Image 1: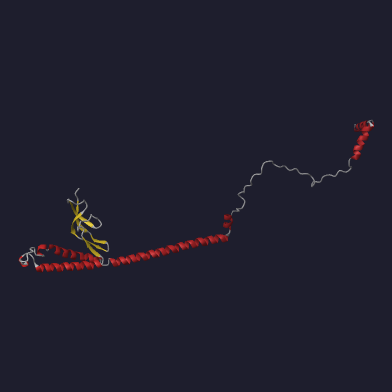
Image 2: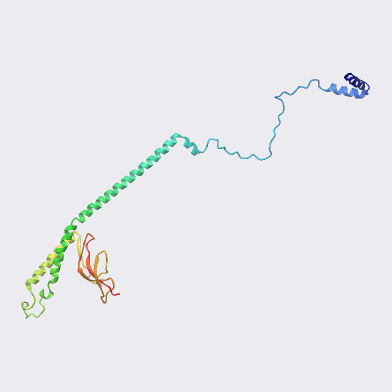
Length: 250
């Protein structure tokens, strides 16, 4: 069967026109006899490109940090310097606090020493107040009629009246003694005050002790109009408050 098909093809070629056969023969003659085969290295590889713009590359979490802070953290020398700086700041702060505490202690000690000096006689002065009160009461009990003649007539002798010269001299001596004593106490910071002297003072709870209240015409409420017991101050500190009567008209 194969032989028959070969014979048929040969006969068909035999009876083809000459022009056709010469044309086919020239085609095969003009073609190169040897066509080199492309090796695997010379094969053309196809590349595919995208028309979309390239997206900005995002650093992955696995990439090592490249910021200055990260580089500083990784530098052991930098860490040591920072630790030393913090230690210096801490020591400086402690030093300044210690100096401030020492200066406060010095000031407090000076105040305590000065206070001890100023109020060293406080107990003595408090004990002396009662003696001063007794001397003041003794001077107040002497009536004024016994201290000077009431009749100014030169023909009338002072001895015939209530005037007592010896009592007047004793009174003057006691008054001088009181003045000298209060002057001496004032040198050491002790003073006596009477709120009812002059026009009077308004009641001050820091200096006065109200023993009673009453109506008094012509005076404001809260005004001190009477002193039962005088007060004393030592270096500005109340040694004894004055006992007073206060006006209350309302």
